[in-house]
Image 1 (cartoon, one colour):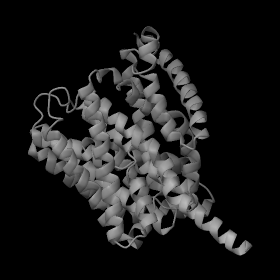
Image 2 (spheres, rainbow, N blue to C red):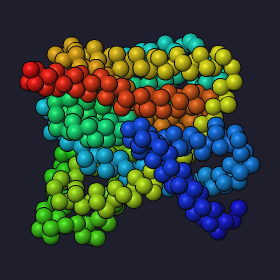
Image 3 (tube, rainbow, N blue to C red):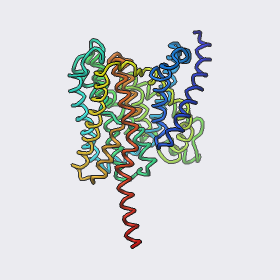
Image 4 (cartoon, rainbow, N blue to C red):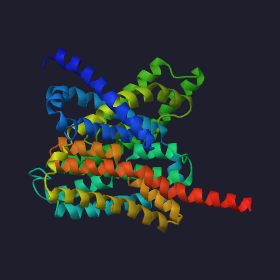
Length: 422
């Protein structure tokens, strides 16, 4: 395909993707699932597992290999902007309020899945059908553990916000623990990727560079960025020049962390967390959020869906492995976080809610899996198994959370009203 044909085809692709995501989103809303879950499902439906299964010729014409590069590049822009917006909404002051409990829950949510993932990587997930040749057992253990321990921080933030828990003790603790989990998981991934390359210097530069970037942006950088907030307050809004300057900073942060192998989303999130709040944050979110969430981000889910092929699970053994991964992920994450929350004095209901919320994977999981597939660490078979786990754990989060957290509250309210009535 020529450049003109690729660009022309991309516009039709984009229209098709947005239409399917919107249709699935309307259906998901009926069962109280957030839009991000609908987009995960829509991405899988548009891939070879469903659309390609029933209409293979049409699917291959709609998503030819020649168009994948532009689809991937634009999806990465959406991903970076979305993670910047997530950081912009993140309140670092809330972490300090529940630091001890957050650290305990976060460590439990990392160590238990890391242990279970490591055991699975030794056996039974140790064959060539799961990992590429040349990947050591140690790297397999770390990658699978990181993939099972990561939390869907954007999904988590959306559920907490939609449930009216923002600023509450439960919401604060869960967001703090989830953000720490993701940071640790990204460090593990960086170690795996740099170790896989066989260059120990890259591992040191990745972790060291990531820590240095975060320290510079969150401390001296944060003080300098306050000037943007001051300008916005004086002007009672964000001008076009301020927005352009902000986008330049976002892209530079994404470029730097991508270059040192921590990956672009980390740089965007840290920069967003350091940005001033108030009028500045309100206007930037107003400018960027609708375009990012409705136009750009769905492309990432479709790109992941195009790499997901359920047909690869063509034996009872592979389906058993998929079930083992799901059970280990839920037990290692949900149960461990529940136990840590109880250990820190949280009520049984709050502890169960924390374990349920921390068990969601979603967007962050898909990012990690796509990196593993692109870097040649995992095979399409393991990629498919892990994507299925991510979708199931994310879909089950909100219904289980409502049942665990809201139902006892409703029973207590009904009981109180009945008592008043008598």
